[in-house]
Length: 297
Image (cartoon, rainbow, N blue to C red):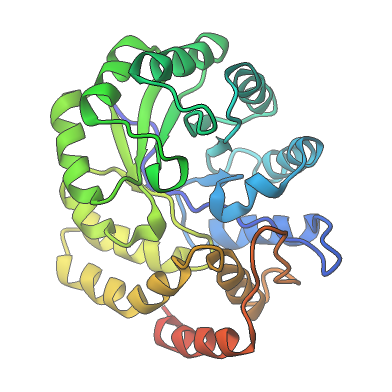
Protein backbone atom coordinates (compact mmCIF):
# COMPACT_ATOMS: atom_id res chain seq x y z
CA UNK A 1 0.00 0.00 0.00
CA UNK A 2 1.33 3.44 -0.94
CA UNK A 3 1.15 5.72 2.09
CA UNK A 4 -0.67 9.02 1.60
CA UNK A 5 0.56 10.44 4.90
CA UNK A 6 4.21 10.53 5.90
CA UNK A 7 6.58 12.85 7.71
CA UNK A 8 6.11 15.17 10.67
CA UNK A 9 2.48 15.73 11.73
CA UNK A 10 2.58 17.76 14.97
CA UNK A 11 -0.42 17.76 17.27
CA UNK A 12 -1.80 21.28 17.39
CA UNK A 13 -1.85 22.80 20.85
CA UNK A 14 -5.21 24.43 21.56
CA UNK A 15 -4.53 27.99 22.73
CA UNK A 16 -6.81 29.58 25.32
CA UNK A 17 -7.04 33.09 26.69
CA UNK A 18 -6.06 33.71 30.29
CA UNK A 19 -9.77 33.28 31.07
CA UNK A 20 -9.84 29.80 29.54
CA UNK A 21 -11.70 30.64 26.33
CA UNK A 22 -10.48 29.45 22.92
CA UNK A 23 -8.08 31.91 21.28
CA UNK A 24 -8.76 31.47 17.58
CA UNK A 25 -6.20 34.06 16.47
CA UNK A 26 -3.42 32.23 18.32
CA UNK A 27 -4.60 28.93 16.89
CA UNK A 28 -4.30 30.20 13.34
CA UNK A 29 -0.88 31.74 14.05
CA UNK A 30 0.24 28.33 15.30
CA UNK A 31 -0.99 26.69 12.08
CA UNK A 32 1.03 29.14 9.99
CA UNK A 33 4.07 28.78 12.26
CA UNK A 34 4.10 25.01 11.84
CA UNK A 35 3.60 25.10 8.08
CA UNK A 36 6.44 27.63 7.77
CA UNK A 37 8.68 25.17 9.63
CA UNK A 38 8.10 22.56 6.96
CA UNK A 39 5.76 20.09 8.61
CA UNK A 40 4.05 17.59 6.35
CA UNK A 41 0.63 17.61 8.02
CA UNK A 42 -1.23 18.57 11.17
CA UNK A 43 -3.04 16.69 13.92
CA UNK A 44 -6.01 18.29 15.66
CA UNK A 45 -7.44 17.46 19.09
CA UNK A 46 -4.86 14.91 20.14
CA UNK A 47 -3.83 14.52 23.77
CA UNK A 48 -1.12 17.17 23.42
CA UNK A 49 -3.85 19.45 22.07
CA UNK A 50 -6.20 19.04 25.05
CA UNK A 51 -8.86 17.50 22.85
CA UNK A 52 -10.27 15.86 25.97
CA UNK A 53 -10.93 19.31 27.50
CA UNK A 54 -12.98 20.72 24.61
CA UNK A 55 -16.76 20.79 24.42
CA UNK A 56 -18.26 19.25 21.25
CA UNK A 57 -19.39 22.61 19.93
CA UNK A 58 -15.90 24.03 20.51
CA UNK A 59 -14.30 21.20 18.58
CA UNK A 60 -16.68 21.72 15.66
CA UNK A 61 -16.19 25.48 15.54
CA UNK A 62 -12.41 25.29 15.90
CA UNK A 63 -12.05 22.56 13.27
CA UNK A 64 -13.92 24.74 10.81
CA UNK A 65 -11.45 27.55 11.50
CA UNK A 66 -8.42 25.27 11.17
CA UNK A 67 -9.50 23.59 7.94
CA UNK A 68 -10.49 26.90 6.37
CA UNK A 69 -7.17 28.47 7.32
CA UNK A 70 -5.04 25.51 6.21
CA UNK A 71 -6.82 25.75 2.85
CA UNK A 72 -5.29 22.59 1.43
CA UNK A 73 -1.69 23.44 2.31
CA UNK A 74 -1.32 20.23 4.35
CA UNK A 75 -3.53 17.30 5.39
CA UNK A 76 -5.33 17.54 8.71
CA UNK A 77 -5.82 14.39 10.80
CA UNK A 78 -8.45 14.75 13.52
CA UNK A 79 -8.23 12.92 16.83
CA UNK A 80 -11.32 11.21 18.20
CA UNK A 81 -11.34 9.86 21.74
CA UNK A 82 -15.04 9.20 22.30
CA UNK A 83 -15.33 5.94 24.18
CA UNK A 84 -18.76 4.80 22.95
CA UNK A 85 -19.07 3.24 19.50
CA UNK A 86 -22.13 5.21 18.34
CA UNK A 87 -20.71 8.53 19.56
CA UNK A 88 -17.32 7.77 18.00
CA UNK A 89 -18.99 7.04 14.66
CA UNK A 90 -20.85 10.33 14.85
CA UNK A 91 -17.72 12.28 15.78
CA UNK A 92 -15.78 10.74 12.90
CA UNK A 93 -18.55 11.48 10.40
CA UNK A 94 -18.67 15.10 11.55
CA UNK A 95 -14.90 15.50 11.29
CA UNK A 96 -14.93 14.14 7.75
CA UNK A 97 -17.80 16.44 6.80
CA UNK A 98 -15.78 19.39 8.09
CA UNK A 99 -12.79 18.55 5.93
CA UNK A 100 -10.60 16.16 7.92
CA UNK A 101 -8.43 14.03 5.64
CA UNK A 102 -7.77 11.38 8.25
CA UNK A 103 -9.02 10.21 11.65
CA UNK A 104 -6.81 9.26 14.62
CA UNK A 105 -9.09 7.13 16.79
CA UNK A 106 -8.52 5.86 20.32
CA UNK A 107 -10.14 2.53 21.17
CA UNK A 108 -12.94 2.45 23.75
CA UNK A 109 -11.30 2.80 27.16
CA UNK A 110 -14.13 2.97 29.71
CA UNK A 111 -15.56 -0.46 28.94
CA UNK A 112 -12.54 -2.14 27.38
CA UNK A 113 -13.44 -4.48 24.52
CA UNK A 114 -11.78 -7.74 23.55
CA UNK A 115 -10.31 -8.33 20.08
CA UNK A 116 -13.69 -8.90 18.46
CA UNK A 117 -15.06 -5.80 20.16
CA UNK A 118 -12.17 -3.71 18.88
CA UNK A 119 -12.72 -5.01 15.38
CA UNK A 120 -16.44 -4.13 15.63
CA UNK A 121 -15.64 -0.63 16.90
CA UNK A 122 -13.24 0.24 14.08
CA UNK A 123 -15.37 -1.50 11.45
CA UNK A 124 -18.38 0.56 12.53
CA UNK A 125 -16.39 3.74 11.99
CA UNK A 126 -14.98 2.52 8.68
CA UNK A 127 -18.45 1.71 7.37
CA UNK A 128 -19.53 5.28 8.12
CA UNK A 129 -16.62 7.25 6.60
CA UNK A 130 -14.53 7.33 3.43
CA UNK A 131 -11.19 8.64 4.75
CA UNK A 132 -8.25 6.78 6.33
CA UNK A 133 -8.39 5.69 9.95
CA UNK A 134 -5.30 5.78 12.16
CA UNK A 135 -5.65 3.44 15.13
CA UNK A 136 -4.15 5.14 18.18
CA UNK A 137 -2.34 2.33 19.98
CA UNK A 138 -1.79 4.14 23.30
CA UNK A 139 -2.13 1.65 26.16
CA UNK A 140 -0.47 4.00 28.67
CA UNK A 141 -3.56 6.16 28.21
CA UNK A 142 -6.31 3.72 27.27
CA UNK A 143 -5.14 0.56 29.09
CA UNK A 144 -6.26 -1.30 25.95
CA UNK A 145 -3.71 -3.71 24.47
CA UNK A 146 -3.69 -4.18 20.70
CA UNK A 147 -1.09 -6.78 19.70
CA UNK A 148 0.46 -6.69 16.22
CA UNK A 149 -1.56 -9.65 14.84
CA UNK A 150 -4.81 -7.87 15.80
CA UNK A 151 -3.70 -4.60 14.18
CA UNK A 152 -2.73 -6.52 11.04
CA UNK A 153 -6.06 -8.36 11.00
CA UNK A 154 -7.98 -5.09 11.27
CA UNK A 155 -5.97 -3.62 8.41
CA UNK A 156 -6.76 -6.61 6.21
CA UNK A 157 -10.45 -6.84 7.12
CA UNK A 158 -11.52 -3.21 7.68
CA UNK A 159 -11.46 -1.04 4.59
CA UNK A 160 -10.28 2.29 5.99
CA UNK A 161 -7.92 1.10 8.75
CA UNK A 162 -4.68 2.09 7.04
CA UNK A 163 -2.48 3.61 9.77
CA UNK A 164 -1.43 2.93 13.34
CA UNK A 165 0.13 5.45 15.71
CA UNK A 166 2.30 3.19 17.85
CA UNK A 167 2.55 4.46 21.42
CA UNK A 168 2.90 1.10 23.17
CA UNK A 169 6.36 0.93 24.81
CA UNK A 170 8.81 -0.35 23.84
CA UNK A 171 7.70 1.28 20.59
CA UNK A 172 10.57 0.36 18.27
CA UNK A 173 10.17 -3.43 18.70
CA UNK A 174 6.42 -3.06 18.26
CA UNK A 175 7.03 -1.20 15.00
CA UNK A 176 9.05 -4.21 13.79
CA UNK A 177 6.50 -6.80 14.90
CA UNK A 178 3.58 -4.88 13.44
CA UNK A 179 5.37 -4.35 10.15
CA UNK A 180 6.02 -8.08 9.94
CA UNK A 181 2.43 -9.02 10.82
CA UNK A 182 0.83 -6.48 8.49
CA UNK A 183 3.04 -7.29 5.51
CA UNK A 184 2.49 -3.92 3.86
CA UNK A 185 -1.15 -3.46 4.87
CA UNK A 186 -0.40 -0.71 7.42
CA UNK A 187 1.57 2.52 7.57
CA UNK A 188 2.99 3.19 11.02
CA UNK A 189 3.57 6.47 12.82
CA UNK A 190 5.28 7.15 16.11
CA UNK A 191 4.15 9.30 19.01
CA UNK A 192 5.12 9.85 22.66
CA UNK A 193 6.80 13.10 21.64
CA UNK A 194 9.29 11.34 19.41
CA UNK A 195 11.48 9.93 22.17
CA UNK A 196 12.36 6.94 19.97
CA UNK A 197 11.80 8.61 16.62
CA UNK A 198 15.09 7.55 15.07
CA UNK A 199 14.81 3.89 16.03
CA UNK A 200 11.18 3.82 14.89
CA UNK A 201 12.08 5.28 11.50
CA UNK A 202 14.92 2.80 11.08
CA UNK A 203 12.43 -0.02 11.69
CA UNK A 204 9.92 1.25 9.13
CA UNK A 205 7.84 4.01 10.70
CA UNK A 206 6.75 6.54 8.09
CA UNK A 207 5.95 9.46 10.34
CA UNK A 208 5.89 11.07 13.74
CA UNK A 209 3.16 12.98 15.59
CA UNK A 210 4.96 15.05 18.26
CA UNK A 211 3.92 18.15 20.16
CA UNK A 212 3.79 21.45 18.29
CA UNK A 213 6.52 23.47 20.02
CA UNK A 214 9.58 21.77 18.49
CA UNK A 215 8.36 21.12 14.97
CA UNK A 216 11.52 22.50 13.36
CA UNK A 217 13.62 20.05 15.38
CA UNK A 218 11.56 17.06 14.27
CA UNK A 219 11.57 18.25 10.66
CA UNK A 220 15.37 18.56 10.80
CA UNK A 221 15.65 15.02 12.18
CA UNK A 222 13.21 13.68 9.59
CA UNK A 223 15.00 15.37 6.70
CA UNK A 224 18.37 14.07 7.89
CA UNK A 225 17.01 10.53 8.12
CA UNK A 226 15.44 10.75 4.67
CA UNK A 227 18.77 11.97 3.31
CA UNK A 228 20.69 9.13 4.95
CA UNK A 229 22.53 11.49 7.32
CA UNK A 230 22.20 9.55 10.56
CA UNK A 231 24.88 11.57 12.35
CA UNK A 232 23.03 14.85 11.80
CA UNK A 233 19.77 13.23 12.89
CA UNK A 234 21.35 12.10 16.15
CA UNK A 235 22.97 15.51 16.70
CA UNK A 236 19.61 17.28 16.45
CA UNK A 237 17.84 14.66 18.54
CA UNK A 238 20.47 14.64 21.28
CA UNK A 239 20.26 18.40 21.67
CA UNK A 240 16.46 18.24 22.00
CA UNK A 241 16.28 15.13 24.21
CA UNK A 242 16.28 16.89 27.61
CA UNK A 243 13.27 18.96 26.52
CA UNK A 244 11.53 15.97 24.92
CA UNK A 245 11.95 14.15 28.23
CA UNK A 246 10.68 17.11 30.25
CA UNK A 247 7.52 17.36 28.17
CA UNK A 248 6.68 13.69 28.79
CA UNK A 249 5.82 14.40 32.43
CA UNK A 250 2.21 13.28 32.91
CA UNK A 251 -0.09 16.24 33.41
CA UNK A 252 2.61 18.89 32.89
CA UNK A 253 3.71 18.37 29.30
CA UNK A 254 0.98 20.51 27.77
CA UNK A 255 1.89 23.41 30.06
CA UNK A 256 5.54 23.16 29.02
CA UNK A 257 4.58 23.06 25.34
CA UNK A 258 2.43 26.15 25.69
CA UNK A 259 5.05 28.11 27.63
CA UNK A 260 7.51 27.39 24.81
CA UNK A 261 5.04 28.63 22.22
CA UNK A 262 4.40 31.78 24.25
CA UNK A 263 8.15 32.37 24.49
CA UNK A 264 8.38 32.16 20.71
CA UNK A 265 5.56 34.67 20.31
CA UNK A 266 3.26 32.18 18.58
CA UNK A 267 0.41 32.05 21.11
CA UNK A 268 -0.59 34.63 23.72
CA UNK A 269 -1.31 32.54 26.81
CA UNK A 270 -0.05 29.31 28.37
CA UNK A 271 -3.40 28.66 30.08
CA UNK A 272 -4.17 24.94 30.48
CA UNK A 273 -7.67 23.68 31.16
CA UNK A 274 -8.33 21.42 34.12
CA UNK A 275 -7.54 18.55 34.69
CA UNK A 276 -4.24 19.57 33.13
CA UNK A 277 -1.72 21.23 35.43
CA UNK A 278 0.43 24.32 35.01
CA UNK A 279 4.15 24.60 35.68
CA UNK A 280 5.10 26.27 38.93
CA UNK A 281 7.74 28.99 39.15
CA UNK A 282 10.56 26.47 39.53
CA UNK A 283 9.23 24.49 36.57
CA UNK A 284 9.27 27.59 34.39
CA UNK A 285 12.91 28.19 35.30
CA UNK A 286 13.75 24.57 34.51
CA UNK A 287 12.00 24.87 31.17
CA UNK A 288 13.91 28.01 30.25
CA UNK A 289 17.19 26.22 30.93
CA UNK A 290 16.17 23.39 28.63
CA UNK A 291 14.97 25.77 25.92
CA UNK A 292 18.46 27.24 25.70
CA UNK A 293 19.79 23.81 24.67
CA UNK A 294 17.38 23.45 21.75
CA UNK A 295 16.95 26.91 20.22
CA UNK A 296 17.99 28.05 17.72
CA UNK A 297 17.57 24.89 15.66
